[in-house]
Each structure stands twice: as structure tokens, then as C-alpha cells.
Length: 125
Picture 1 (spheres, rainbow, N blue to C red):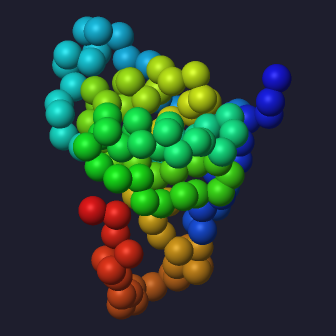
Picture 2: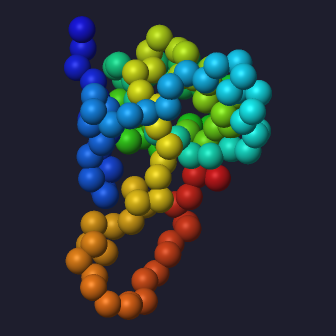
């Protein structure tokens, strides 16, 4: 059995063996979810093939553009398409791309009010 991947973000690492992800949604849970798309981190048991990436892009109706070490991608998906992705045999972990993942670790030491610059130029949509 292969070890679970570590997702390496600038804000810190996610150990997919200990961090709870999103489980496969039941039919009832799927029906109660909206079709609104959100950002998710998807981890694979090995580097995904081009065919698998194309299949995910087709499911989400959005290109996969951001690789995240190790063997992970940032995916913009609805709960329905995430449900299908989560069921793929190559997918070992899926979780939301949380707001705290977007913050630079250098901001954690700021103790007073300060101005920050937000750059949207490298956004995936």
C-alpha cells in the first residue's frame, strides 16, 4: 500500500493521512448540495495521467491549471463533480481549499494592524 501524499502549500503542509478530507457524498447529501463551484485540493496516489486530468476537466467544465506538490491539484468544482472525482480509484484524498491556505506564513507574525497587498493576477478562474 502506498503512503498517503503530503500536500505542500506555502502556508504549510497537509498530511492527508491525518487531515480529514471530504468523503464520498451519499445520494441524499448530493441532492442537498448546491451546484455552486468551490476550490478543492485533490490528491492522487501517483502523478495523474493526462487522460485523468482531461476527464476531471470535463467533469468540472474547468481546466486544471494548478499543480500542488505532491501529486495534487487545485480544482474548481461543484459538489456533484467533486462526488464523481472523489470516487475515482486514483484519488486518495479531497478537501476544501481553506481560506487560511491562501495566507503567507509571513503574515502569522503580524501583531498589529497593517496594510497588505492582495494579488489576483495568478488566479485560476
